[in-house]
Image (tube, rainbow, N blue to C red; front, side, top):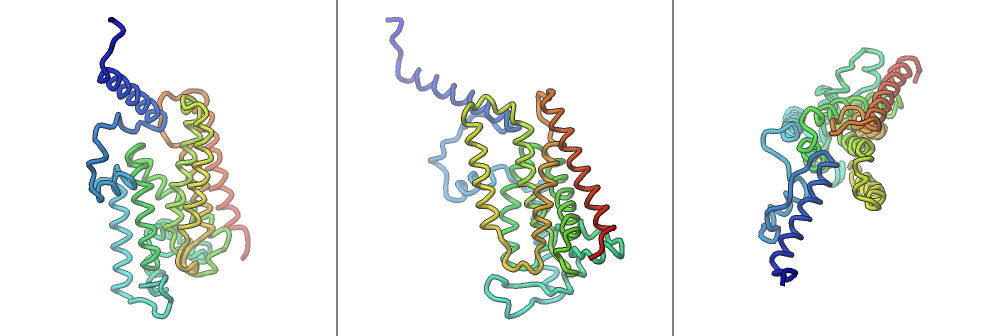
Length: 296
């Protein structure tokens, strides 16, 4: 009779095992949560969307600050300069070019010949039209609320500001702006995608507990990345720096490898951090040297 157990005991043991596995998996990804305690069947539609897209977003956070700042600047540009007409349905409420320049859009000629390096930082908060505003706000809320909740406000700020600025620098180097002011918001967004890849590389040894699933995660990450790139295209490429997106991804990978704090921190993690720092140094150094030495 000692081997006879009630069904409830098996259920409790199963729940405990699931909780332990969840904690172990979460710790290897940077410390996400504990066991699930709420029944998702009781969620309403709003709660379901929040838990699915940005479960960790807070009112007082870096993510919310960026969203509010981008929105305020976009409304200010429309209020002061009006909007362009006859740009098509996807270019609804398109700001005037002169306003984008006044508010600090990234202009490679000003950066190269006038030393306006501040444009790398101001342009990461500017957006040219309503469609791009919707897409960028959704992506920032999803990516940066998740990044900030798991690895802190400091890393989120470094990825957004540092990664976005380096993306703008790379865009200027490639000369894709053609002398016109451009928005670099998507450079910062793609920087977050690169940061997740860098963190994934940094956490590779710790994810060994997942076994074969670790390899599947690479495929899943690649598929998600492809779909994001496919469906996050701007309404009009005239004011969006596509080379800046590429630069943002590269900078984000380096930042994710070099700046992220995870425990325990062994020899593999030290090597990855050094590689990340070296990659960032090379990316920044070569971009600066080539930008001011090449003629275009």
